[in-house]
Amino acid sequence: MSDQPSQTIDDSPRSDGASTDRAGTGTGEAARGSRAGQDRQGGLMALLSLANTSMFALYLGVGSVLLPTQIAHLDPAHKVAVLGLVGGVSALFATVLNPVAGALSDRTGRRGPWIVGGALASLAAMAFLGSVDTVLMAGIGWCLGQATMSVYQAATTAVVPDRIPAERRGTASALVGLGLPVGGTVGVLVASATAGAPRTGYLVLGAIVAVAGLLLTTLGREPRRAPKPSVPLRRQFATFLQALANHDFRWAFIGRALLVLGYFSVMGYQLYILSDHVRLPAGLTPAAAIAVLTPVSMAAMIVSTLVGGVLSDRWNRRKLFVGASATLSGLVMVVPVVSPTWTGMLVFSALNGLAFGCFVAVDTALVTLVLPSSEDTARDMGVLNIAGAGPQIVAPFVASQVIAHLGGYNGLFVVGGVLSVLGGLAIAPIRTVR
Image (cartoon, rainbow, N blue to C red; front, side):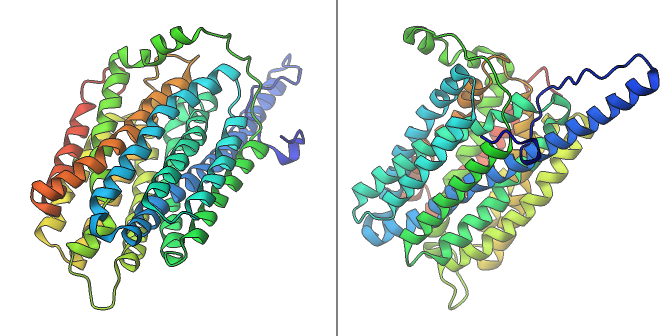
């Protein structure tokens, strides 16, 4: 990590021994210190936004296009079931390793090494995934990708509660939340352009993560923190999910889990929905259709992420935005049922983007305000990340069973909508956040 102030961003508390004996001098120094602190935090937020952008570029580029295309090529007759199995098993790795990696970075007192290590390991995993030619090896490759990205994600998400003041969490979460729409668009466009040469697509997406991780750790100077004392392994397991005993944290966990389950049950099968369910215009392939739908959805996410995050700070109302956006996310699932057409999918993508973008931005701010312990932020954020990764274990199995036995893709949209609405209702019992 660089030690040059001109090349790094350091938001740690600073004391320069300036005299404050005279009111004017003290006020001027305080004002300059406050502005400098805000500038440092602004730079850190930009780096975090880039880091999250790279993460979602990989997740959505691989999960939405490259992996389904690869599986459809390797086993076209069983693609729905195989994608469900591969997606579920690989997400299990993410669920387990997210809180484990978070707890380890808490214990070492450092985030940077875990961010860089996870990023570089993810590049290696993508190189492996792009070289395989069997379903089994593709499954192993994506398991490795999910595991290494979980290390990267756990350390990166802990930076906001570590280093951003509570009164700026909504703005920070909005900027960080831009990673989903921007990263999703970049990832899908890269994946769609390289669908015929998946090895190139995997390598490009892995390289994006590696570069972003290196920039965050070298330019966003990390304040020194004392490592946590060693804790016996049995005690670590006993306290691992202790955060869920907290009333508000538990309901935030449940709300996120339900909405993510509803969202990814549908979005994980978008390529197959476009190829088997929606009537596309002549000459428009499913991969090309995703390359159009994703920017539409992500542009809507950008608007709602910024507006929702900033307004939730200004009004100090998190639950209102989270509940309303989750409910809208559920209701718009009706659109492709009523109109399984290209126009219907365009409308669905725009409205779903508005809803999910606002949810991601404000829900991130909400959960950082209900963390049970300031000493275990990465561990607790890792546990909370299970609510994002865990449902992705269930989602492929749920989706494949719904498609097979409960009305096909129409049934899938209905189930996804119900789960999303329930996710919005689940945050109502939270007491300490408005």
